[in-house]
Every structure is written in structure tokens, then in C-alpha cells.
Length: 468
Image 1 (cartoon, rainbow, N blue to C red):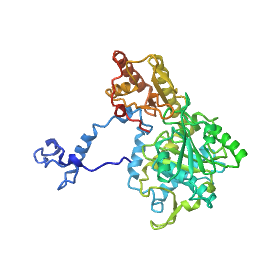
Image 2 (cartoon, rainbow, N blue to C red; image 1 turned 180 degrees about the vertical axis):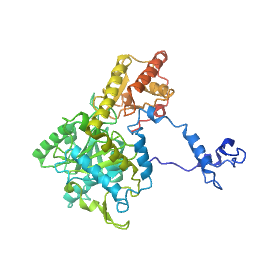
Image 3 (cartoon, rainbow, N blue to C red; image 1 turned 90 degrees about the horizontal axis):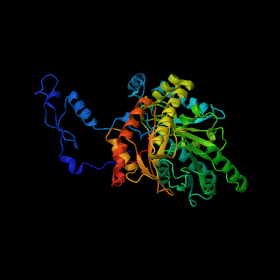
Image 4 (cartoon, helix red, strand yellow; image 1 turned 90 degrees about the vertical axis):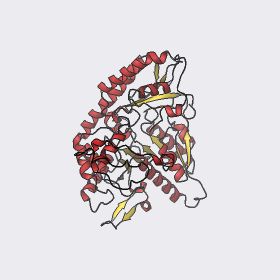
């Protein structure tokens, strides 16, 4: 969550109250304007409080037009009803809500089967608030396994974690919070994610694991998980180092099993110790729910599992959060039940069709060069063509926002700081019709952008952030 400071200079602000908010008597419904950064002295009628908050939220962007986020922005009304019925259930209290706990267990079993766990009944897993928490848990397990194996050298030796520089920021947070050295493989040329041989070259006796990303947030590409495991197999043959792999499949974990069935990236690879995914991304559930799974009990040290009994029963838990709603877990099971394999295949296939079609038509405009084509994750990145000098991707992002489209523009990290791109995330609900409207707005802007004397966006950091 973002950190926020106190009220400061905003302390004197108040919220204007419309006389119509008094349902029966407009004059009687008027109250003193409530402050925004401290508690009002007295209560407001519920209809007034609702309307004040509702009106302020109108200034938010339209989530369906947000092509920056990977997070689900549409579900069926029936899913919304189920979530409303479960919003008061505390997911941690599994003894009080045993059927909700059972649905969580079923989801773990479904994912273990989907990701080819050698023995799905032996796989260990849990729901989380999202992939960021799931990654933290997976990182903790990697570190604890390394610590136990190196008890004679730790804490003197500093553990490290190897990953591509394109990883989601949660991995940098993990390394910072848990005092692990982050060893990152930089981008090179047209390679925008981890290189297996380069990753293996960064490993040593203090490496707790290597993170592979199935669906990079920078460009939507899959990292070569099988190639990474092969490079680590060769490393073990040369040096004896046995380095486990965690697959951060926040997005790809719910795409590849249905559209890329021949791609080997999951527990079919013996070196893959754990996998995470975001139920609230291509798992097709509203935020926030994620999942973390381990190959078997040996991959998750028992001492990390807490057994809580004061809520009415003895329950094993592995989480950074404690109380959280059960609604999203119920919605995940609903979606699994509702779609099945063929339904997921149809939904994800339609989304990929939108991505590849839109990418191709944008390339046909002639002003842009595609870095990826939406044929792995339904995500593609593009930059301006070499002969375009009157505007840049930040200008495009800023102008598209005027039409309601949120398209992130950002600069790549080392060693490709010279490259700035736009990224388009296609999700279920972003249809061919909406893609057509997006393309029409982009096409309409191009003549004006071409007439600019030079790129005009001065504050590129504020033009539009890179939101994972």
C-alpha cells in the first residue's frame, strides 16, 4: 500500500453539501460542511455520506479504459453477489467459516493439478492478498531453506537472490526487508528479461534461489524457465551447487496452462520449488487475491508455518497478513467452477486475439515499432519509430489520457535506459470494440503529434507512471 502523510495544508478543507442530499426536505438535509482531514464533530445521514464519497470518486479514471493495470476490472454480477455475501467473513478464521476454508483448499488443489505438481495431494499452498505477498512468502521459504543448509556459515555469510532486472518491485522489497542481496541480470540489446546463462553466472554458495518471471510486466514476454533450469542443472554438475527456482507467474500462470500447453515452465521441471500467481490478474477475480504453491512439504520449511488455535480450532497458516476477507477466495472458486479449462481457454484466447490484432494494427500506422506482439501475455510494448522526432511516447500517453485512456509510458532499466516505451495490457472486458475505439483515438491524435516541433512532455515522471 502507498504511504500517505498527514493533512498538512489541507486541514482547513471542507466538503460542499448539495441541498438535494436531504431526500425529503432539501433545506433540512443541509448540514455544516464536514472537514476532509479530521473527523467531523457529528454524524451525517447515510445518504449524504454516500453521495459525498460517490461524487468525489467520479474524478477517478474509468477502470475499463485503464490499459496500465493487469488487475481484473470486470466480473459477472453473480460473482459480485457472492462477494457481497462473503464480505464479512474473515479468511483467517477457518474454524468459524469451514466451507470458505474448504473452497480455499479446493483452489490450491486445482492449481496444483493445473501446474503439474508431481503429487497434487502433496503440494502445499495458500491464498494471499495478491502476488506481492505470495512472492514474499516464497522468498522467505527460499531463505529459510538456505539458512538451514548453511547453519555453520549464517549469519556471517550474506544470502543473495538472482533475478532479472525486469522483476516486479515486490522482489526488490523482499530483498530489502529480509536483508538479502539482490543480484539482477541487466537487459541487453533486444533481450528485455533474464538470460539463463547470465543468471547462472551470478549464482554462488550464498544464492538462495533464482526467480523466473512468466510474463514480464515490462513487455509481456515469458522468461525461459526451462532454459534457466537447464543452466542451473549444468551449474550443479560443475560445482555441486543445487539452486532452486521460484516462478513468479503472477500473470502467465493463468494464461500459459490454457494457451501454451506445450510450454514447460511449472512443476514438471524438478528444479522449480514454488510458483505464485495473481488470482486478481488473469485469474479473472477482482482484487485482491493471490496464490502461492510449493512442490511439496520439503520445499516449505515447517518452522515458517504457524498453528493458531485461539480462533476456535488449530489451523496452520503461512501469511504476512492476518485478517482479510474471504470474498475474493470464494470468487476465485466461482470462476474456476464457472469456466473450467475450456472456458478459461476461450476467455484468454479472446484476450490474446485482441492484443495481437491491436498490436498489428498499431504497427501498420507506421509511427511505432513493436517490441513485443501480445502473443505471450496479452500485453505488448511499443516505442516510436526511428524517424519520429516530433513527439515521444510520453506525449502519446499524455494525449491519450485526454480521451480517458490510461496507457503507461516509462523508460527501461539498465542497460537499456535509452529506450522509452508504451505498454498496452489487454484484459477480459477489453473487447475488439473497445480496441477499435482506442485505435481510432490514437489515429486521430497522430496528425497533431506529427506537427509538433519537438517532444513537449517536460515532466516525464509525471506524464504517467509505470504501474505494475
